[in-house]
Image (cartoon, rainbow, N blue to C red):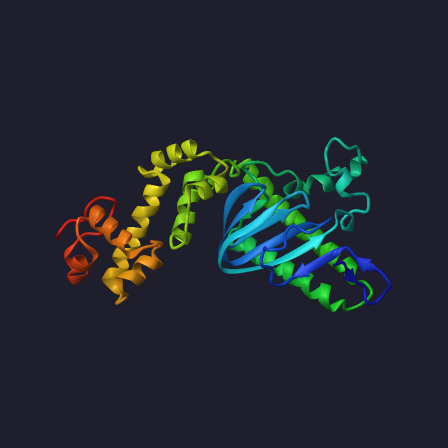
Length: 306
């Protein structure tokens, strides 16, 4: 909802969230600056899976689509604004380069590229150094405080000035990372790596190959080929091995029942878990549990007696 001005009868096209959960993004008719201050998350943005690690900033427009898949210790704050709040001549209809605007406003439009020009390798996500984070967080906090306090009749002018400072600062980061080609496919955008990270977070759930294919927009053959090239196993082989590795740790370090371990590691039946554990590790779970320190860690091959 637009912010209501307590000093004049008008609404201002801005909103601030001190505790954003990334579940209501993007906002209609708004550009959004989202600062991830703590934790990490897996999101699906414009049909691309991306891993977010704090500190980072997201620059979104209404044309983006975003779904939160997983989060851990997530904390974020966000500011949402209509482009005309920066310059009265700017609107979502003229942010494309093909639309002519007055030359003196071109640079302001360019500074919104990080919101509007998203492609396969850049989805509006910018990693931050500690120094970047401190400065952006300080500006965000001041904008948020002024948004809610509206200390006098000039509060919107102060927010506009701070917002322009914030956008200019983030644009400099965007330009530097673009110059350094940091938007080319990094490791955590690799489909195989993304699927492996998803398995690490969701191994206790009912993961299917179709689900993994949908996450990274690849068919089964392509995904398994890329996954095997990187990890030496297909997706489902890797999932089974990872579950067995976790089960080995639980057998070694807890008093959980075999059936409880099977359930916590994503095995529907404890009989299937026992059969797979025995076949892959070369020893039954019960026998392994009697003297776990005498065996090597599972790496996809039968464990060795030390």
